Length: 389
Ligand code: PMP
Image (cartoon, rainbow, N blue to C red):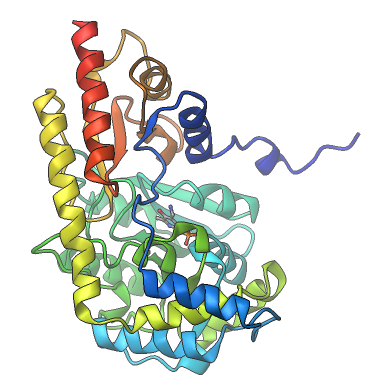
């Protein structure tokens, strides 16, 4: 029979699904896939249920419910001083995953180059490659995740159509500084390129950090596409409500992609998230505070076990160097699989975020969990290390 599409046929199952399946099979504590123990704000869950029961169940407008698009525009003004025309510049999608795909479909042509910063979220490269565009990866330098400026500049060419910027960054937890963003903005202007800004963790940052959307920098308003996710901001990752903000000339082709990919997103969830985005400042501030406490708890435990931790200022991920715990010739994927079976703790190997040769001893721990979950993972690791020594 004729071959199916080679990019997708050769792609593995995403590491998050694989590790969560392993977690279920081994009754392990899951600090792998990024989903919170928290069930999300009760008022929003109630609203979602009420709108569903009371009959908001037919196709909503293709670009999203006006109430949600207005709330997205208002949120951009309130947090970043961005003036956004909700009718022409906001699109609701079924999660940031669909938003990313819509952006790539709407903006890329075959042969275009796309600059990625590794470690990169695992959706980007296959989606770009599938469209006949070419990912050009530049690696941030652990343990501080510095931006290698000369390499980044060298990755741009006349064929560069866009750069994907994920800040705060999964899995590194890096929050790009204004100075780094200025450098990136300069490159985009020099090369007449766009940026797809994956800002799903925009509110998940720790004290002293500021999230600066690239879109707010001079010259960037019409070159950046900003993506947000209700799944992250309201701790309900299964809802899959995302939103894109971009100037009309960029949003128009992206909307055409959305029209053919999902067309709409469940209306009851859109209604609830519209109410979520206008919650008071205390709600948004509480996200970082709660997460910082969980991060400190996990970090203290891992340090106590002797693991070096890498710098992270946002997201709900912590990266540790597990070289001291690995067997000779073991890679990070084999190590993480062994950790599930022997210790009963699920983590994510960082090589999943790299194309080609990757760092082999870095592992991601997710900490948006109840204290009891974090403590259970630490107890299991402690017991396992006790046996290993
Ligand atoms: N981008 C990044 C960097 C993510 O970590 C995730 C979720 N893990 C997504 C996009 C997808 O978000 P959503 O669940 O809204 O599709």
